[in-house]
Image (cartoon, rainbow, N blue to C red):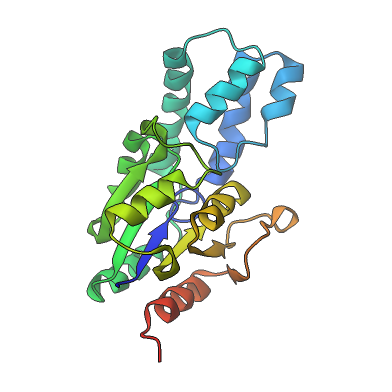
Length: 220
């Protein structure tokens, strides 16, 4: 069996979390009461837009799904068009492409947002499978493993031969539940909120590169 590496997008490929932390609270304060907004602000890391919408509804949001999405979409398009791409990540994708590695992407973000990020990558064609869990109602969102299981099935790879790169506790829980190997890419993670449950951490892009290449290396 071949091996595969599957990447998350937010916080891994796109250094978008800072901008989300800056812009999302203002939107949530507009659509929720102050006490309700306080409960959700700062706690959406790794969540899909549909999961945030469901949470907002429970907290009293009275608008439609379309209204909620449109508000988020205006913020997201600006964030993904302007946020930094993790330095060295595109070069790593080029190296994986040159090695003919099997590479996938599984994100909680809608596909339109994923495409904006991919359009900014020189080596976007490294991805043999790209999935927006948000747009597949048959798949439970992270922390459920459904998205990663579907990706491994599409890539025809066994969990033990798969390395998942995640940065949030929600995503890491999904990766672990899928049965795959999981590496926490912690370059952009607040040390006070470091995810747990994995034994492998990459704190820099150089460490991530080493982890990917070591995983792909033939076993003796």
